Image 1 (cartoon, rainbow, N blue to C red):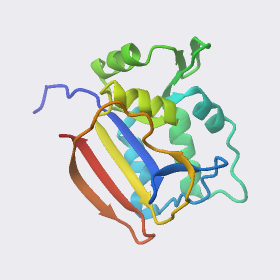
Image 2 (image 1 turned 90 degrees about the vertical axis):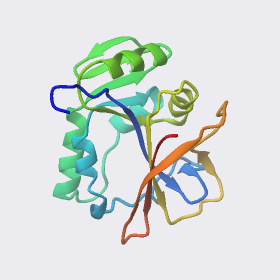
Image 3 (image 1 turned 60 degrees about the vertical axis):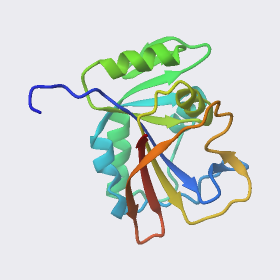
Image 4 (image 1 turned 120 degrees about the vertical axis):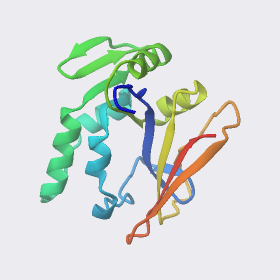
Length: 186
């Protein structure tokens, strides 16, 4: 309906292995396929704020691609760089450019959801994801399941306090073998 503002949603968009890991035992993510068919830029256009845990933000900030970077990868990295970022930290507070540091997950996310704007991308890490799931803050789960089994690593869902019933809204299958499952709250 025109004229009625839609509430912002928290969207967990994440790559996961077939056995449920978001990274390998040593932090490796070399198994993650950036399939152009997935049109990640369209997802990036649907969000204006990224929610990071402190460790994940530090890793993202220090990321330097190896080898030649495609124009598409450069575009996506710039799109991410331009987004507002909220980093949840136990010790750091304040604002640095387009990055806000906060220690209060529930209050901060609820305030952001109440403001106008595009959706919020819950990037992670695992601790922040767990906290947001346990607080009932995640509105959509976009899990891109990659065709690999690691056997061990950092699990996507750990220490979830209550059962979470979800409603499968869409399935996307890509030529790379990645299957994206999109769930909303039931």
